[in-house]
Structures are given as structure tokens and as C-alpha cells.
Image: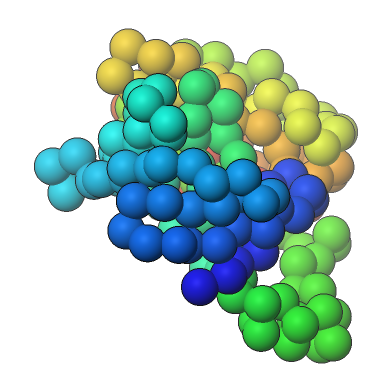
Length: 165
């Protein structure tokens, strides 16, 4: 099955060849991807290199935290991609965006305040989970409209941390 994976606005063609092989940009990789204990934590082994990833779904997309960085990911088969491109994008730059915790943890720092203007890619929250600090970044430019947490707060997975308008 062929898919188009979009990460930070860049498209990557991915073809699932069998249960343990995928082709990424035409390069065949050996992969093993397993959930750890039914949690949003996954063990990912790519060509013998081991990674830990946090993966959770949002409305039409996925959020992936890998190596301490959060990536918004959209995975579509070729047909879905063509249909979406004909119908136009469903993401609105003017709609309110709710930043949600990708995993349970503790808020370490919030380097912004309500009313601050932020740019795409700017760090909004630093969240510690499993002794690792993760920078949660803004997916677009906007203004912080609501902070719902403060440093030291414990948060649950998918809990709304703040809003960007």
C-alpha cells in the first residue's frame, strides 16, 4: 500500500512492502513498530537502530514525539491525498488551535504568556515525561489566547495546555 506522509509541510512517499519492510523515498528499510504495554509509547526499530516514540491521534492527523521533538504528521493514501487536494485544505490558519499534551507528564516551563504573539515553530511548553524533556512547539503563527496550565502542573495525555488564535 502506498501512502503520502506529510511532516512539517514536507511530503514523503511511503510504501508498505510487508510486515517488516517499507520503502521511504524509494529506499527499503527494515522496521519494527510495536506498542509498549497498550500505551501511546511505541518501540521503533529502523535498520537495527532503536527509538522510543509517543504517538497519539488528533482529528485528522497524528502527533509524534521522537527524540524530544513533536511532529504533526498526516498520513493519507494516494486516493485520499488527491481528493483533499481537489477539495482544498481543511486546516485553517485563522481557527483556534488547542495544544494538547502528547503524553502524561509535568509542565516544566512555559516561555510564553497569554497575549504573546508567537511564530510557527516557537517553543510554547516544555513537558517532562519519563525523565525526558519535550519541547512542544507552535504549528503556526498566532497569539496565545488561553493558558490552561502553569509550571509544576501534572497533565494527562490529550489535556489541553493552551490555545493559539
